[in-house]
Image 1 (cartoon, rainbow, N blue to C red):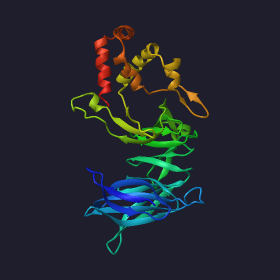
Image 2 (cartoon, rainbow, N blue to C red):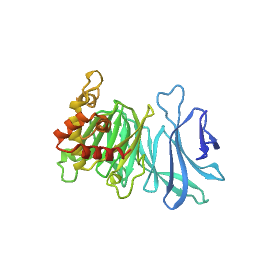
Image 3 (cartoon, rainbow, N blue to C red):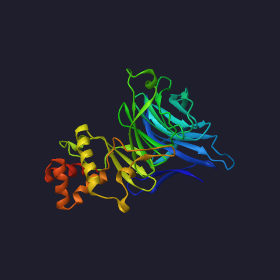
Image 4 (cartoon, helix red, strand yellow):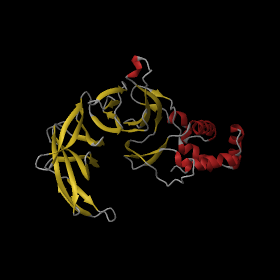
Length: 342
């Protein structure tokens, strides 16, 4: 049997427990507020995992409020499939349910109680397992059909990648650039083409970055692992934290172009000096690959390799310094600044 539990944020002791139905599993959870309602709610998406079903055909969206340190069920909505992911969206609730993305609004009944009311949905997804939102845009990660970009005009598709990739999680970096991770342990960044793009490209997401992480990423989250000083240039660099199935926590930073080009040159020179275990090529190791192709990494840097410069002996530091045309002290300073991102 599965439960929804409320924990104390200091002791992690159970404060309240809500039992789910037999065969019902929790799939997603979210803390949010709705339009015209300032209360904070906990929304939980579930699936009924029946022994003879290959894919759940029934689930629920549960909406809780905490009163007197107890979970109180305020509303529930039955669904025709597992609720794999939920997110707040323009004062409403967005849910990935089976092969659809569905939008619900928070309505006030005549008797003063609240309910989730279906507004619209988008079909055509193989299995939407994760999504992120920004403004009116929705980036959906799917099994087999890769990534698609939706826009809220009753939720219509704006663009997609047509290569078949099994995505594990996605994130929106800015209005035009999106980040994804797949089941081959790769990272990929995509760009939405502008209005001036040719018709054949307008509806496609262009892959602009690829990198083999060698970790199965299960979650991205905007944020930082360290405190940044407000007057620091490094503190202005946006970062995304990721977590993996092996328990690894890492950081992806969106570097300014000048900084990226500098460290790309440093990385290239470090590859010539630092040899991989067993003679394995670093360039080959970080190449993005799947069942169909292998391509060299692009528009990604390996922070671990770059920071290894600080562990080199004086002779090798000077060798790289000479090739770069930058003093050793300046190189060390810039690498140490990069390290402050995590």
